[in-house]
Figure (cartoon, rainbow, N blue to C red):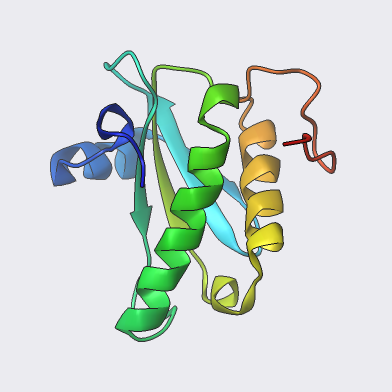
Length: 124
């Protein structure tokens, strides 16, 4: 679970990111982001009914949430991000989801470590 300061909870904030933020696409998910007011980067996760039934949607959001949580230290502070799951994410493994998350964060230039690049996963 994401720590409290890293959650984007108000629907007005999510809508603002969707309307004013930039977007980056991957076959598994989309990343929308814009500079935020908070000190820490905040995240919201969305899975529509096109992804699957409730159990599948919740699993997909858990996978995305965990992939982001593992790399919170690598993400620049002060950004509001919305992750939108695509239907193909329901068949993806955690390793594929983690690779997609790092790929999108690198494309958006939201990673603090320059050593983390597309295709190179950091050691844990």
